[in-house]
Image (cartoon, rainbow, N blue to C red; front, side, top):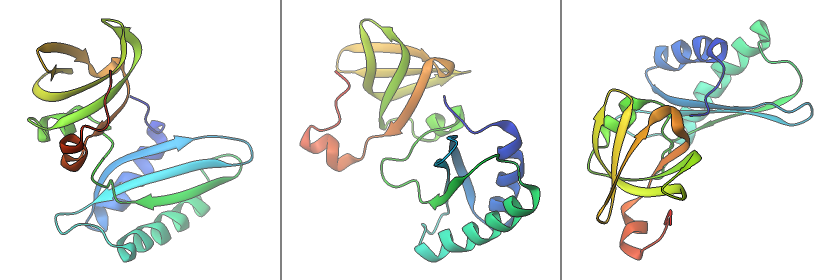
Length: 161
């Protein structure tokens, strides 16, 4: 799973949590002219624009002082949304019984994408069921994973086939 470098996570996560939010994950896409640092936050009450602004101001100040990222980049603070990205095995455990779309680094049974219901998490292996097919996928084999919102499932959207 693509994640931000450890030094960024170690710097950012305590700030987010200190403000009373869950740090769902951090995307970092470096680029010399237009890099992107996106931080996903959540709380039991949900996330409003004001929450994102509050976290953004705190993180900006620390990043300006610490200067952990070379070059230019854009900082975004966002709610994970209904199609929340997954960054940790524990997030799969939390959503057992829900449908996810998983992108893979290498094909499994000829597929680079699997849309399936999370049936089980054993260590770092996630068991997904797509119809009659069962896939046991190591967390490290996933390049990206997102929750599939119920309204898309009901409409037949977001297929990994």
